[in-house]
Amino acid sequence: MCQMKRRSFLGSSATLVGGGLIAGQKGHAQNHASSNPSGMHGHVHTVSVMTETANRLLAALSPEQKAKATFPFQDEERMHWFYVPIDRKGLTLGEMSPYQRHLASALLASGLSQSGYIKAVTIMSLEDVLKVMENDSGARRNPEKYHFTIFGTPSDSGAWGYRVEGHHISQNYTVTNGQVVDGPSFFGSNPAEVKQGPRKGLRVLAPEDDLGFEVIHALDERLQKAAIVDPKAYSDILTTNTRTAALKGQPSGLSASKMNAKQYEALRALAELYARNLPSDIAQRRIDQIDKAGRNAWFAWAGGAKPGDPHYYRVQSPSFMIEFDMTQDNANHIHSVWRDLNGDFGGDLLKAHYENSHQNQLA
Image (cartoon, rainbow, N blue to C red; front, top):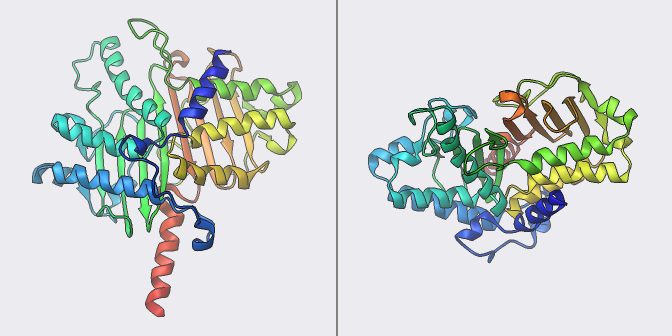
């Protein structure tokens, strides 16, 4: 019962645009199909909100802060991403004044749905839990060590991007000619469930875990045998922090074509959960990918199939891959990611942008 309530909450809250904390839904494009022969959705509203919030933040920074927060769009730094505590480029929340942090939060919200934004800030807050658990001084575990980096010049046209990253968060946005993609898109949680203290029972990524179990438990013994590719869960997501997500060989696990309607519905609900982390117009790109894949998708599981067991799952299609791993710290530590196999760091958007620019130069 609680799982259904949780799913219902996410389904409804995800329809609210993260940027709606700043602006309403006015101006959302209606007729993309006729103006966009590629079939890609033009994310007019969200791009406008992203552009405005990025420029508001930049305008509030000192020259020294701006030098840390900005890079040219073509800089190699844009492709560097990771989800563990490491030294990073960018300007941290801790280096900002209170009003600058509000503006940075607005930029983060512009690229997420309401439920995605709640996940992000709650993940950040877990650094305080880890600080107490590990008796840390704050040098390593610090909810203000989340970095904001802007690449290029924010505008509704042209190419630019931004990254919000720190421990267990890495959101990488690329904007090109009014279209936007978020990828790689990583959320993690340590602890996966807070076991003690005033926040005992908190599970930030409970839906990602619970819906994964719903898929594996919906399968009969024969199909479970096909889905489980390894009796031991992997120690991390297999694609880690690679620039391009790719696994050797053909997809493994259970083909969605072999699932009955109920089983496939569970798989689709799981995939859509990852799409709904984004504002509705950007989420639609992911929904379109899920629709296009249909039953040309594979579900793989590794590890135990009981709550508390170390476990891993993967949803793989020709255009996207979802990975989820819960093995570290006695299976109380989650890594989850959506990878766009052609669009991470704006790959397909930029390719179309440069091809069109080249054609225009020849015309």
